[in-house]
Length: 193
Image 1: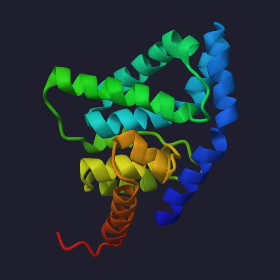
Image 2: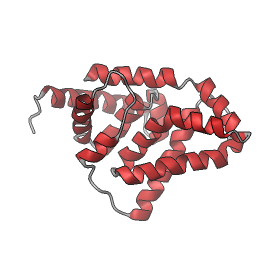
Image 3: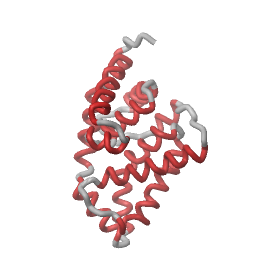
Image 4: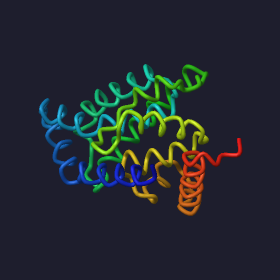
């Protein structure tokens, strides 16, 4: 399963080179609906995954994902290329998710069905793998899950995650490695809980 997480991180980084995403955002700023559709196609799983990790509700995460791309359409003209278009996109999604949490003032537990609805586009991940991975990720703390999802699914580097979550880089690194050890223990069935 750890190999699956590593493969997913490589796929996310390979599928979303910064130059191509910045070109798409530039096209969106010029009014290209085709570029918006392409950006959506390439990044929807990462945006939805991040929203789901915060909201723990599939329907609300879908709403935030849609709102993210609406906001991207409106904000694209003000985007300034800095080599981090995915971080910009995920910051929009995170801010919308946090706003929804503040407004709702409640957090629901994530059900198995909602996690299984989180589709990760990977040829190496079967439906059974998704179910097992979702159950294991559900046993991590919110912060641990955010760090793992941002790295393994969204393809962000640890220093980008640290900036994104407002944590120190050593904290992100240690929490990531502890989370992987915890996941390994859970997936191997040696969990003492």
